[in-house]
Image 1 (tube, one colour):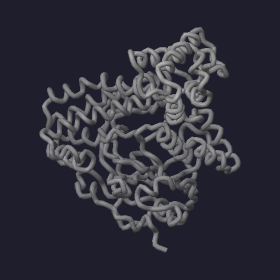
Image 2: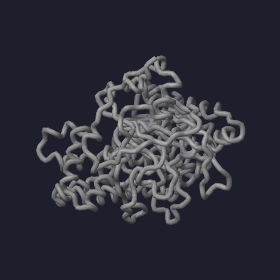
Image 3: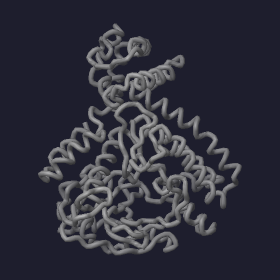
Image 4: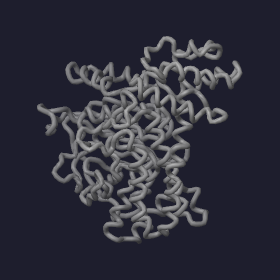
Length: 467
């Protein structure tokens, strides 16, 4: 049987840009190939069904890398913790191929843990099995929560033992394939500015607009409009992270996608309680990338991108577009938080008041951020419309603000007729999953994998996330 992955119509979009933007690389060979995860939910997007794709097909394509296509390690630089680093690039992955989806969108297959490249420096080009597991969980959870995110297509254990400096014993190795809209980063442009190549900046920007912002190709000033839309997309992404209670952990400019998509998950974490100072990465000693700083950092990264784009666009136009970031971000955040509370909109500034009092309640009580919204979705009933005292009556929230918050939520409910309550309940369930994998939950499913090679808790968690 022909391998469906090898029979896809791959588009040489990135390849056609030329080797100023990548190096052709050879993948590593691994002693073993155990398929640990296959994302069948993504197959229909590229015109495949799970019944026609066997496990061996995943291994052949994404573990043994059987393909006639060249594999491209992309070149980029970036600001890491505020310091420019010209020694970056795809150091443990490559662009496997690009496929046009049934929805007309061009998608990337990008590897992680597939071996050394010219940009590996002193690293081994590998990915720990736990790192792969964590990235799967991040992508699937954020997708369930409505965040614009990349997702994992597959994860294969490779049979290699890896040594990591922060671990006392060897750990297991894996190779992952990421499914995303693009692997072009802010740092892809920053590298070209570093070499003062406006010609290459123009080629790349034309490429980005043609493939990822095609509606701008016939507009006047498409470059300025591109930056304007990117500012909007990144503001939305930051609002999605914040409302989802998600801390990316390392928002360096090489981890920012030019399509405004969330990707490249390392030491991320979902917050336990509402704490703007919460920091996901243990090495982020100053809290630069803490949960509460994410909108500010996203804006700062957009400002840094003005350097390379300024070779083609007037600085005045760039600054004018960036000036809207805070307003746009606040609008998106308000909208998303209202949806987590069950409402599409509220009249007479009730929405702003409810969101602020909800944040105040969560901050003061330190009740579980995700459990609070899960409680809303699970306990919601028609009785809440009749009496504020019935709201969250089964939740163990200890706060002096709770009574006033319940009165306000009841006031918001009173602006709707009884027949509209079903839609509120539907919105609550849509935006608030019953389980969000905070660190303790991830560690709980990782323990049986390491001690018993038991993957059932991991698969069960993924099934629960989808509900």
